[in-house]
Image (cartoon, rainbow, N blue to C red; front, side):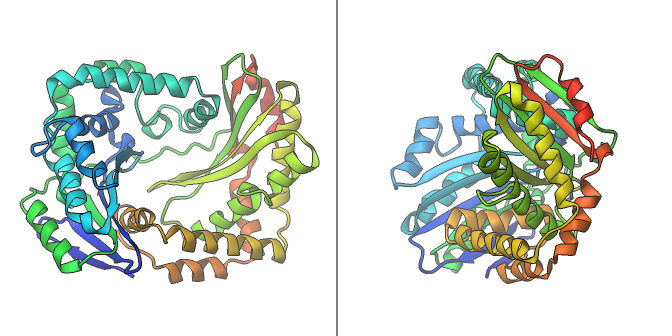
Amino acid sequence: MYTRTTFPNGLRILLGELPSARSVSVCLFIGVGSRYEPDEVAGVCHFIEHMVFKGTARWPEARLISEAVESTGGVLNAATDRELTVYWAKVPAQHFRVAAEVVIDLVRNPRFPPAELEKERQVILEELRMVNDTPQQLVDLLIDQVMWPNQPIGRDVAGTKESVSALSLDQLRDFWARTYRPNNAVVAVAGRFNPEQVLDLLHRGLHDWEPGETPAFTPAADPDSGPRTGGVYRRTEQAHFCLAVPGLAITDPDRPVLDLLNVILGDGMSSRLFLELRERRGLVYDVHSYVEYLRDTGSETVYAGVEPTRLTEALAAVVEELGRLADRVEEAELKKAQELVKGRLELRLEDTRSYAGWLGTQELLMGRVMTVDQVMAEVDRVGPDDIVRLARRLFRADRLHLAVVGPIRRPERLASLLRL
């Protein structure tokens, strides 16, 4: 499925060949994200991710960086999350060299031009304002604040208006220098390529990257003191709400069980939530559930948008479905969920960027990579009783947390509905 090579400086290289592909994707993962940030520099990882695109040693202007990849027909981007930052490029297979050299230069040789700092600060502040004006995104942030109060994993990955406004160029450079280290990084390449040529190019660009100390984060505090509620008043046409419980760590043995539980609950148009709230009751247009895994914790969340006068009805219906899942799961329902999970994985890995992401994320966050066959075998081993067992473990009144964005002035009054 893939090969792993480790350079003397600790950098891990994972190569996944797809000989029939016409593209190649290069992803460089750094093991640092927003939960590694002290409060006073909240948003620094995201700010760094923006600033490296403002110029590198080889491509000193933003325009030159983007042109180098886009002139091949390729795509270049980056993303910051709670536990990692990733820089990636996807190009036609014959242009691998350009993709790799650009990504390497972004990570190793950013110029951090002082003239670009204030302009990019304004760009990020606009990004924060955009989220604040988008109820679906805002309630997603709010539920994390409610569930993980006064913790880095409860903050917006991009920071706050106050923290972003105060970050200095020296703080960005210092944080980058301390955390962007090869023993805290993984390069994943997927698609059609010559492995020897790829390793040679990566070695020439990365062998002299000096290792450093691996950054650490504060473990998540136990959030089981619910039900807790939070709200942001907005004069919107819908009330947007998230109902969430703390979930599982990324290495938890019950992870495949939760993946299937989430599918049965609210992932897709044949899920319980969709069928009950939309098809049977006509309460909502959008209702779905999603799961997040972190190194030491996680979450299971339900989102819905509903006409404000029907908020209590919709919320009660969601809570009722959580209770039903802790009562019984039919064999046929589980079988459908298993096929959905396995089928999506197979389809996803036909894309070279998804394949590279699959390899690099597992290696960085878990220190190992499961093959597709191993994942499918784990999924197939799950039985209906496993789903019920985990639902009873997760869906308890003291673990329920609610966030609401919309024309609701007293969201705390909804706490009485959070009973199982």
